[in-house]
Each structure stands twice: as structure tokens, then as C-alpha cells.
Length: 518
Image 1 (cartoon, rainbow, N blue to C red):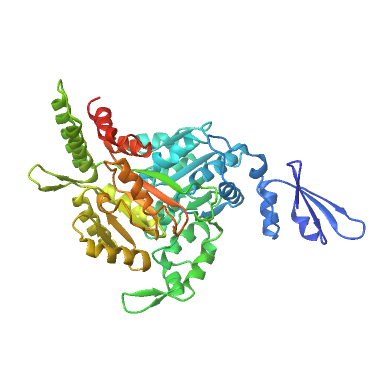
Image 2 (image 1 turned 60 degrees about the vertical axis):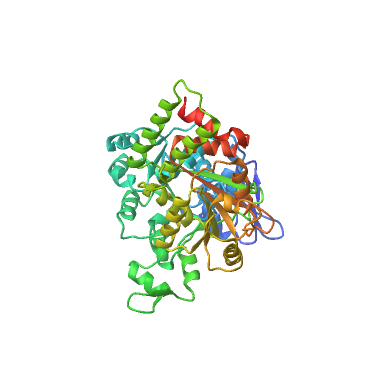
């Protein structure tokens, strides 16, 4: 196979009969036997050739300019190639390997070739700006985009009814703007990120997505962990992308992949994994280990909404700090104390001057943590500075089915060895919740390839060392994903300074000057 002048695919074959279905072709017999077949290098022609078992690259590989700040890595090119060829497909690439930008480039190419007019992106609130809009601004900035997420439903609808080429909505916001999407009629491509949210066909969320899809709608569904909790969860995904690959009813799919143990307990059948694989096609997958041109550490950010309770006390504390600072010299030590109070409120648990713990409503933050973990296929480390947060996280993770251990100042050294051994050498422990000062140095925790900061730290050295617990020789996946969870100005300033490796002695003072005193 050869691409000629970026226009035609040249094939040398023995039998040319099967190419008769192609409209744009030229066939010449070869003296001595066989045929030279020349086929237009277009998306439709490539789809037909691939159906005939002939591997031909998408025209995006040769004709697209790949705009933006970064040049695509090889796996991003391959992912974009795959996406443009398949009208409906799954992208199962690991978290942090750049599938967001791959999808944006592929969508831009389809708009350029006039196959797509508008693109709808459906994703969690936490990555609407931090991932999608950020990558948009670093790649296809020549296009127009809007985040349709406002407290006023009319503003969301107005964003959908406008002429933006890319519209980004959150899962549940889709129910608010669904009628506007259907009546607009120009959304030819829908991209769903963290698609496991659509594993259950009985939910209003699934029904809202299904209601905006027409037979002509292109659909790309992205997740790093398809049906990770149960083979049953593949059903909702397959019904959207590959409905012919599963039975017409959810109960029939469950009977196909599960076996009943008791009245209320089911277990996967021996061949369930193979059946799920067949149902979730067509699909492409790149693991972090396969992406050789990735950096060893990949950093991603999750933005969280503060609850009204958190916002109220955050503002109250900040106003008090401003009043205290007015006309007075505030020492670095006191600046650090003040900043720590804001960080505690942001995380959801604050210690009073009497030593009591006040817990705030932090449901959005916990929900985002759960989203991150659902996209994590290996073990994980969660770092947080505050004892109250550690206890709260441990209870929450156990409640939602994760087996985790704690390492903090209250855990005796004699027990830490057993905890680390269980984490590193058995499959019993799925993750660790760690206080940085108790485990920032010396520990090898390479069974984890995901390091999650539930909030920022007050030490650049500890931040670096926490990442180094997983990013070291023996790393199981070769690459480490670091996730920052943030919801307030002080947290955003802190993570920016930590990632920038500011001087240790300046960290808290700079945060105070930028966030409180300005």
C-alpha cells in the first residue's frame, strides 16, 4: 500500500473484483497477472478499505496541520486517525495520555472537511475548564468554544443555541439543554468523557444522552476503565456505540455475562471478559507504558465547586484576615497560619482554636475524588495534610467500596511496615491515604501509578517527595499521573506555586500576599 501525492491509495492486488463497490477508483491490469488499484484517499474510501481488511491510514495523518502549542505524540496521531474513521467508537486510553487533545484535533479535522458542523462535549464539571477548555486553548484556538455551565438555565440554553462550534456541558446539565440540542440539529459529533457515567440504561442521565443522538450522529466515548466494576456496566456503553453487540434488554445481557450465586448476589462468568471486549467495539487503547514519548510524570487538575457553606466561611475568614492585615505587618509565621485556615475550609474540615473539628459539606470534592478513582485502573496514593481529612477520606472510601489503609502520625512505626508490605506485595489494599510528613521520604510505593493531592501542601519539598514515592525505579506502569483537586483561590495559587517549585521559605508568604492581602 502506498499514498500517492496525498490524494490516492495505490494497491497492488491479484483480484480486483472486491474493489468494484468503491466509487472513486481506477484499476489497471498488470502484465503477467494482478492489478494496480488506485483509490481516492478519502474518509469514506478508507472506511470501505478497512472493512475489506486493508489497513489504510486516515487522511488526517497526511493532510492535517495539527495546530497549537504542542506537536502530537505518536499515540495521539493514532487515536485521532482511529476516531475520524469510526462514526461511533470507544477511546480507552489511560488517563493522562492526552486523549482530550487527540479528540479535539480529530473533531477539528472533521469540521475542516465539512463532515461536522458543531461538536458537543459531555464531561464532569471538574474537567470542563481544567482539561477541555485548557486543551482547546492550546490547540484549536481558531475555533469557537463555550462552557455551558451556569446557575441560570437560560444562559446554558443560550450557549447551545449560539453559533459556537464546540459546546461543553456537564452530565446532568445535558438534561437542561437537551431540547435545545435536539431543536438546533447541527450537533453532528458528540464526545463523552469519563463515559462510565453512562453504564446504566435506566438512569435519567443515560436517557438524556440517548435522546439527543440520531442515527447520523457521530459518537466518541472515552474512559480509561470500561466496565471496571462489573461486566454488567458494559451494557449501557455498548447500547450507545455498538447496540448490535448486546441483547435488546439489560436482563438478557446480565444473564449472558453473570451467574446467579444467591437471590441477590451475582458473579462474572468465566468468559465475561471476552464478551465485554466484543461488545465494546470498535475501540482503541493506549496504556501509559505504551506511550513512550510521554513524560514520566503527567499532571492533571480537577476543579471543584465550593458548597455554599464552604463559600460562606471561606469569605468570612478571608475578610477577617484582610482586616487583621490592614496597616499592620504580618509575620511569615502568621501568614502561614492564616493560609492554613483557608486551606482547611477548602478541603472541608477545619480545626478551631479550641482544637475541635468543624466539618463542612464537601460533597462535590468527594464526588470528584470518586470520579478520579473510577478512571484509575492501578493502585493509588492520596495525600492530604490534615488529620480530620484523613479520617473523613478513610470512612468515605470504605463506604463506596475501596479497601484503603492510612499512614499518618498516629500510626506507629511498627505498623507502617505491615501496611506498606500489604500495599506493595498483595492485592488486598487498593490505596493509601497519607499525611505527607509521615511518609514523604524513603518509602517505595511503586504499585501505585496515580498520586492524588486532595488539596495542596504547605511544603514544596514534601510535594516533590510525595510524587517520588511512586515515580521511582520499579514503577509498575512506568508513568505516574498526578492529580490536583482544587476549589478555591488559595488552593489554585498553592498548586501553581508547588508545580513551579518556588522557594520553600516563600511559599506561604507568596500565597498570602496573592490571595488575601491583594
